[in-house]
Image (cartoon, rainbow, N blue to C red; front, side, top):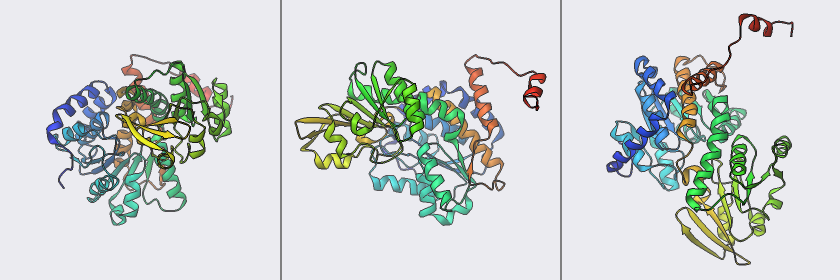
Length: 415
């Protein structure tokens, strides 16, 4: 099938972006060399749905170097970069994606990737897996397994597995230490603040930032906001995470209370209706709302539009809503992922680790085709450790190694 992109003439710009991240992703460079020699994906077709920007494009090229026949789409209508899509097509890869796709176009792009028999699924949020099970169940027989990049996607997989619906093994990439410790915390923390600042051109220092959710992503956002001089309030539903936030030095309160104080709100929960009509009613004039969870359901933008007296675009990616009491409330990036809808996503060095986990997990699936009986697969510890070792080496750092006597002690009953 032919690719579906906006404009192939945009490719030169995309090539420059991809080359820049390639220079700053040494783990993937090393894997590209290995895959080129070993061809672990020879004869395999990989369907991939991840935010389609430069770092993802380089992952696709690395997998293709390993012999994979790549079928690529985006995982969010506002995160696809058209010049990146064009560059991949010019390099001979098949792409179905463009920026600002309608809901119908987005669905059809996913469908076109899945219309051909795929062997490995690489997903970000679960849209590929969901459509494969609901719209193309006859093609499941060709699937060896897949990899899931996000917390939200894993929650969907767990629900499918509990319902007895998941039909093939999925590696839980997000749960690997070298993914969520760094990608979710440092990557999300930096990229969210970057997306907010480049969109609003406003200062963070001195503001009250309300962070909804204190998982690894919420920890990262809170840490970065605090480091930039903000006063941070955390909202949570998990009492353990609430205690963590308190002991990390943050104020903790329900959203209904925090709504009165916030200058900037960031939702990062993976849940729906986190900021609702009651919260909008409490907000002060000028409050800015954005979302860093996978789906655009955390801030109830639809309800905000219904109750607003006026809706007006303020600047690119900022929509203003005039509420009773002459109060303006602003939403960034339509309530979609602010770090990608309003920015370039996580730093290249962070995604280098996450995508190394992805690539090695896909290789693991190819090597163990037909052998995996569990549907939810933990990333093998040796993959996590190998990525960590390589990353330390590229950073020019070294660590201690246990002596044989120490290993014997730790594995004995003497402890």
